[in-house]
Length: 257
Image (cartoon, rainbow, N blue to C red; front, side):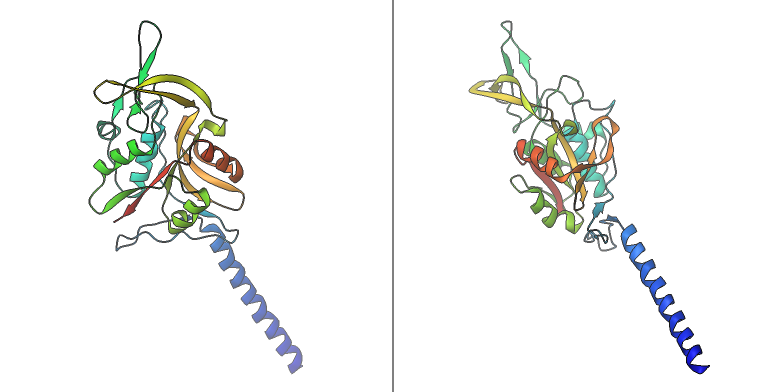
């Protein structure tokens, strides 16, 4: 009789322990969102769920009906919002260096090097875009002294995952709209800030797009995509890698000094 009671007691204890472990595992699986600011102002390392997923809860912003061709600016505003910095769209645009793309009477186009200035107007459907150095300049002018921009261009997505995502830091990356293949678009003679023709020809890569890398798992990358109010979307890791490399491996992040 005593042996039977002892066995029942051991079975109850084992079942209780198993329920506790299962509850803890479920809690870990649900903790997808990371990077919450702690009192000392540091950013917590991102937590991985049991399946290896990392997610950073970056505030989402859409460019729809605001900046038709301003994916870079809106993605930059999402980075700032993550650091609890909220300039208006108008203020951000006042720090974005833009140069017009024009066409002369013979149909010849003139415009900036998109690494030096935004080509066109991000508030216009006819705008083109820009690359990290332009956004780096804009962000630097908007950031407080305790934050800085890091141009991470050239790093692989795996390296960005290790160096930034795992530490709870989102990253802007240049890919393509809806992960469509890019292709050569308009070409123009490059002009400098004074309007002088430099002699260089620039060909725009159509479907260029900028998003914020906010997470990953074994199969997907998670992106805050400002295009058409897409929200946070999951794309196949291999496809994102292809488009990221196709667009020149351009990226940047905001970190603490």
